[in-house]
Length: 203
Image 1 (spheres, rainbow, N blue to C red):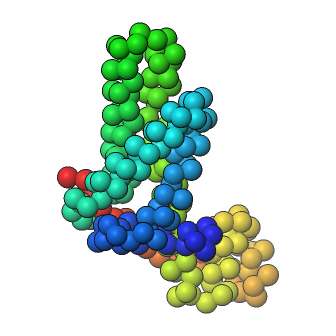
Image 2 (tube, rainbow, N blue to C red; image 1 turned 180 degrees about the vertical axis):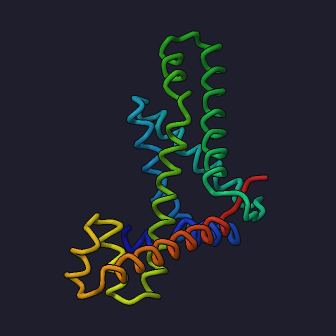
């Protein structure tokens, strides 16, 4: 992520929930997630004007709901994001249906059919948020462990190198390499859980 977008989903959304006047935060929010929604819409062969409207609806819906959330450790952010996204797109679909009744145009029916696959959009955004949470979790754990232990995890878990090769490269025992990998992996998982628990849910 760029320096501008260094704030995590958890931190950013928590800040925006507390203050709707955080212009810098909203700018980051729109710049980060707007293009993702818009790009998906274009990939679904929507016209540019329709893609822009769907994008705006999704972002506005998320902004509107953000201030009425309650925190619940049992509710993941994925569920919240899915509900918000699908509701926003469904609202737009309803508008197209009304427009179609008024005009009777086949082009509008085509646009409506293209928009009804909301599951794909929700999944793509879920993956985006999950990736950002994972990156933040790794960043937090990285500050707590030694360089050798971190590299042992990185080379085995992310690069897929054998433990023996990593042990030789880092001048560590093989058992120490795998111990470091397992411990760091658990720490990252725990951090992800903490981040998700700090995110809002929709009533």
